[in-house]
Length: 288
Image 1: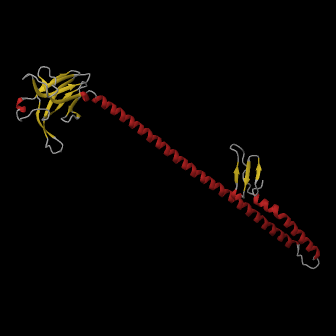
Image 2 (image 1 turned 90 degrees about the vertical axis):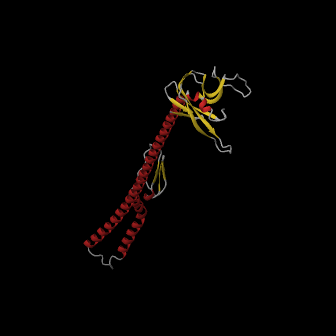
Image 3 (image 1 turned 120 degrees about the vertical axis):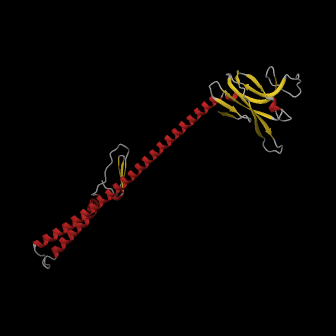
């Protein structure tokens, strides 16, 4: 099969010179390999008419001038023919070697390209694995963070339902008195800290801290001064119950005014799980 012309045989097409051989076939079909003797065969096929004409021409010249020319002896002719054949054989071998070299170079280039592509595919596969691993790690971290956040929310669930504030309340019931226009008998109400447990479980060992508000009335944030920490703890505050504690007179009498504009409170307590908590004078909940 010649590789100089385009030849179609079934689903196989061979195009170009041996240095530019392209073989196309349906996957799974047999592909014809390049012929390293193609160039030599082509040269022989195209050159034999000229060689025959030259032989005829030489024979005719020999017939015409056989008496005038010195044809030499047989050894000389044998040497000349041998030399000519050797030159032709060397030329033929050179063509064949050149074509074989071109084919091997083309195969080496193709193999090199395939190796580079395989290396690129391996790198891409490795990158894909790294990306997949990174995504799994991120998903695992997100799941862990979500579980930790849920555990923290569960841990703070009861504590977040406990509040405290400074209020005017009934001595007998401990319930705050709401509204400035409410009239109560003298001695039946007082100022102090009020604790509200709005959770379904009790809290224990409740302690109140009293802070005096310092406000410059110039638009700057107000600050506080810790003026008293109760020594008497409320042993239990039941679910959905309110308990109160009076501010001692020795603290209350230090300043002229005593109301919820002057004082704020913080509360420390233990939840039903045994965790100790503190809600400060600005209502920020912190673990102890």
